[in-house]
Length: 288
Image 1 (tube, rainbow, N blue to C red):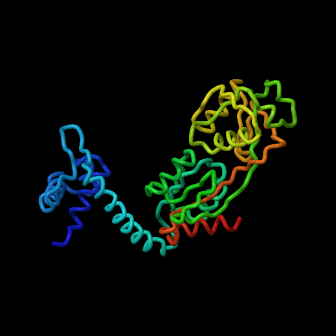
Image 2: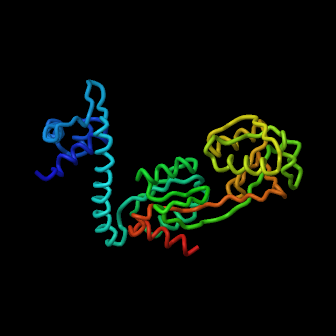
Image 3: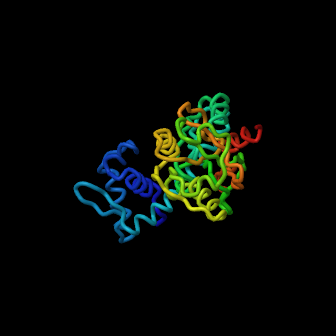
């Protein structure tokens, strides 16, 4: 017996939805029909793919491994659908960008939306580690990474390179200075990003190389949270020069002896790089 596509489709829908009822709604089938397909799959192979109780449906070990395969299977199905739709001049479809800093891609997104108004574009923000996870888990189509990643599974395009700068509240003693040096940050209360942040990692490496000490005033998750903390005078922050933007509460300070730069790299999975919607976005980026 060849494995049943309808059984795999039912299993995949339940695994993704976490519920037989929600899976049935997605598939436009009755719940008994979906349950029957999953039951037949389990009976034929003599396995359990779900732990079932009254409140939840959880994947077994076999179910987890099978979900990895069905994700690939249905990704191919989606690719087939998008291939056909793409050749209708990209009049429909979706594009998900997972980014470490939206500011770097917004100009390109604006042009892309103007050129292809039928495409539903969504931007999700996180630090580089989380962004990369979303790309590899097929939760995102494109990823903007705050550092270069050497991975043969990725097709990467360098986007920009910017220096690291410090920033302070407008009433901070340094607010009237034109610049600072790394030595100024030695022992100074700093507003640090969360672990896994490229900004924090770059600062730690730069300070360690210069023989200086980092003094944490507070740790804040996310760029916006760090900027708010600095604005309230909790400490000095660091950021990519391209990401501070304009905030009347803050003052930017170049770090004259800082050698580090932040690189922004746009990446997609190499296996999906021939998808027309990705090619269209990357082509737009190459136009500058």
